Length: 611
Image (cartoon, rainbow, N blue to C red; front, top):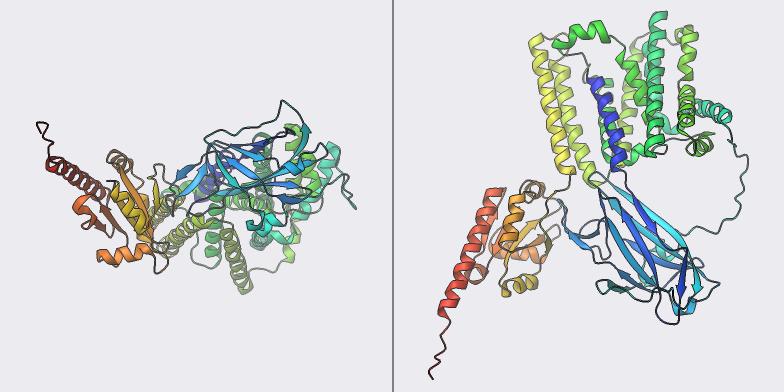
């Protein structure tokens, strides 16, 4: 049952990844007209509405600012860049950043010394696209040919645009060396390139490519699964070996059918599932759980209420089917002989051709197990079970644990924390399952153990989701400084200073559970409360000095300053303050500000008009 659930989850995330796939489209004109005065090249970015890209300047938060460069003959050219006004965005974790959403426009000034019909310029755009699950690098270089014209040139920039001068000496080495600019390529020359030009050729090379996938170095965790499958087949009857191998092969073919569907209808390329952070996280958890099983931490048996159904329906059928499915997914980041050329041709063909070629690759991957069904006596070459099988399981367990580290390394910082949280809860749940949920325990003990496993799994999923999902409602915030606080108070603004740090887990919890609330955002807008972030991740900051001046030494901490007596007597919240606490503090600061303003009006002397 659990394996079927895992299978469903993986299919769900595979389909979901088609929705969350990052997409930034860069559009520039093929030609740009110029005249004697200022002339600009227009750059338009269409940004997937599920996410955003970082602006430049980016702001103090984490991220990579967009880089737009004008290039001529492979070298950066100093120019003036006009950018559309950006939006300030407060992520749930960390400082605010400037972003573009949906659509962004830029104007690049054509330098006078390059205005010549013989010149071709290049516009290089590098941006980091982020959505709720992951961040993906987007980069593109478009060529623009210059033409002389008296009427068609773009000679003006909208008033709302922000002007900045690009200084090529301040760019990173990656931009300064123009490593992102490809050379001019006319006719590439290949040596021993496999040529695929027909359906028959693609099917044949697909079979060979799938067969080679079984031995490629990058499929080490897959090799572990296959060897364990063969070892466990030792000692089985002829019929059992045939059934197990057919089911394993069926799992492979069903997975390739899913991959073909994603390629045909969602535009996915080979290995693109691993662009989705949630998918990688789930794969890491499943592989680590399998490693724990090989270490002897637990042995999965169905819960008591499913035992009778499992005995009649499932038996040993789900294990090889799931292992074939998992082995195929783990193979998708890999490549090998013939695979690149086969896929390059296939992905440009009609839907039925895509299915035919993908299934041929799957047949090649499953071919060793088809051979086993024909010659099951090959299994007899493997020694019978004994102590050596226990040692082999431990070795394969370490290989899978190492593979888990690799998958975790593919996650960004926020997703990594979420993945580790989920692994911790899953590990604890499977550990107690191995003790109290084994088949030798009573039905009562096993039922309680499975309930605990479900609770821990649900808790881990919820907390990992909580840490990974950005807040849907965000309160704009700005970096704290003593001068900025004084400026806010001089203008009569209620100002809340939020103290936080990268190492403060309670601060992140408060950020997610308090400042993510619509009621807090509404109260801040209604009472015109300005938020400043005092980050004390490093020592000797102005924020730390303010915290010490207030008399506190711990965070989370919130201080709300207001005009009048509130300058020296802020309303403070410490430790794990709640939504109700901050609403009460805002209301109190607003009420006292109104009283202060009323008192100032009453004390203002009346002008005697009779004099």
